Length: 409
Image 1 (cartoon, rainbow, N blue to C red):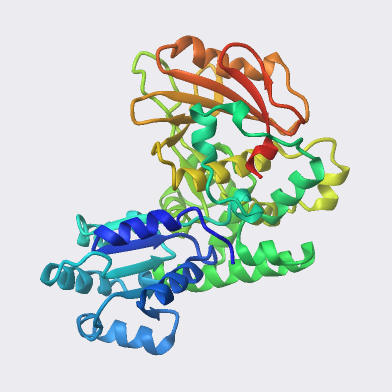
Image 2 (tube, rainbow, N blue to C red):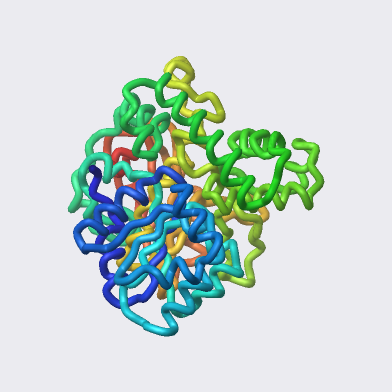
């Protein structure tokens, strides 16, 4: 079993918060982690994926909760929204830390009625697919914080071998996909995964019977991963009205199948693009949808830039989930098309820019956006990093560095 970055934070939250929700896509390892904690703590465990449990919780949520004594773990609670009000009532009667440990495969922050019902009583933590560090057996070092302002010389970074990077890209981070022995078996897993989510979870959340348009939309978004989100262009390409498109997009976002990265716009005097970027955040799933196989990448002259940028997005999100500095993540683009792929920002407003290059070489022009950021935001600029598929960590001027993508593993 993999050691997960989030485990210490989960244990801390249970020590002082009545309700803790572990949120994340299906098959990220939530059930495994929660069952492990439950067995160590003597906590009862129920899953709403069990038909009898689902029937009991759905028919009488208040009675179901009232019948549970002591601490409990409830898996896949989004399947019975009525449980949240019953849990709220139980917590208001007896407010004990760690009483309810919940998991959900739908983002409750996008389901306001559910989120509001437990405001002030619930802490939400995110469990993403496995990070490269977790796969490699190192769940302790926070690499987002290290990139932001850590001692770059303190961590040895091995050369980034193309074959290793390609394997990371096509495998992604879902534990079962990681453990599949061949690309063909991973493809079968991703097909089944998408079918299960799109034909069960979407139907439950949206009460939709006609589902053919949503898989097509996800396929279209895979070709746009790491691009600006443009609903007008997507509407024309998909032949969906913008109203329908936005509804479907929100469903995919709620199920963690797409991710919206907001634009950084702290300086009101600058003309910045405010549109977010869109990602299909797991590269294994993205490569599957876009047909980026190992064989296809082996004969290509370079690696697909959107896939590599998506890999970095996924790694950053996984490390930000347990960042001691509580860093936030943005993208940056001016109306003159000067851009920085990612901005990390701390609570004091300091920023580090990160550019992603799929190539194995890097030169001064690759730092154009970072130098612009350094000049225009000098008071808050920490450093600029170009992540590339090369072999050496190289300084490129004051506060500017090229770092191999192999830093993630």
